[in-house]
Figure 1 (cartoon, protein in one colour):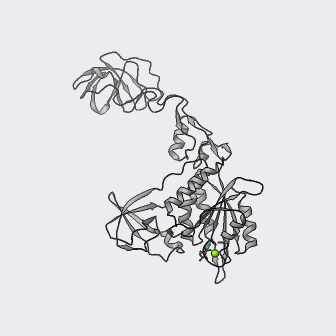
Figure 2 (cartoon, helix red, strand yellow):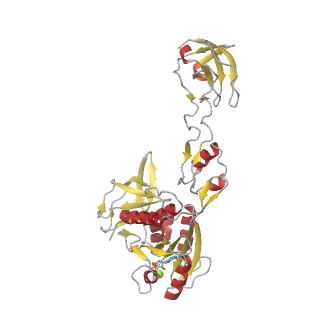
Figure 3 (cartoon, protein in one colour):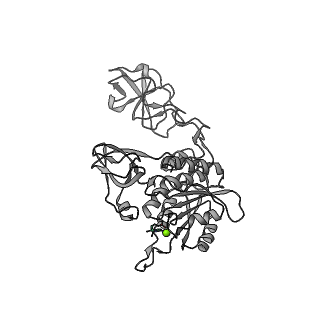
Length: 409
Ligand code: AMP
Ligand code: MG
């Protein structure tokens, strides 16, 4: 059985190999949050556009400065002012943060390092050429790439785009990800279940995970564990850019997802990964519907809700990134110190719901008591997953372990 790293690499390689390119659209910048840039954003001019003072103080010639030097203040420049006076030796100009350095000046002395009497400014120290000045074009040259195509837009990217006036960036359309839960026992989360029925939580949690990744969830509802219903609903799901099924991939008599996918001509890339929760996870490529030939990624995630969430993070997330035109980031592991000894069956990599906390700068992690992969409440109380490597049977308190922060899935 393959490990999770290999399985994730297979997803990345195969989905990349499909080579499908989503259509693009221009969106108002504030709505671009979470979307993936389809075109580079280039700088409309040099940044900063002028030699900019980064302190409140006096614009000077560095060569004039030394402790005790006296300079004559000949004017004032605030941010936004055009610097029309130029500086000659022995003089200085009061300048505010964000102001443009006047001709002849090459440095700024902080106001804190001066004393003033009338027009006479006494320095208490020397400054070097360029000190407290950010040179024109040093952050970004005109025409240079500020944000490359494939970048996912977060708040800092929005600021970078805003700075260069990219008011309507071109992004890929949201990948449409079909979500189909399976199981005779399931009822809609908004209804009252019978005594032996359960509410469908996977469709909504998957929908939420897809939205957080900038995708558009196409919720197809639930399929009963019957060949006919699965055939019909899986075919509908194959009209989307990718299909995620939950449940029906284990060894039970009514686990019919794999037989139906096989019947529909799916190429199975893997149908088990050495992890817990999530071992029976399936990844296949299936021909699109109705008249498409291009392969579509299909994920059969185990139905236990924590398995569904974890396998989404490990395997579906990179696929959605690639569909949207972004490079999947590596799994964001963090190191933390285990607070109590722990034993797990070796052979599978375990991803255990856990709580990470910090004392000072040191991270500590404690697994949460849980009843296994059906324990949704435990997952909701966790803020991370603790990773127990497949070869470890026991980990002692105080050992460093790897943690995946919530938000990776
Ligand atoms: P399965 O993977 O179909 O064998 O389901 C494993 C367990 O997860 C069973 O206890 C199911 O009732 C439960 N389960 C399956 N699908 C869902 C779902 N959509 N929402 C909540 N629980 C589910
Ligand atoms: Mg089932």
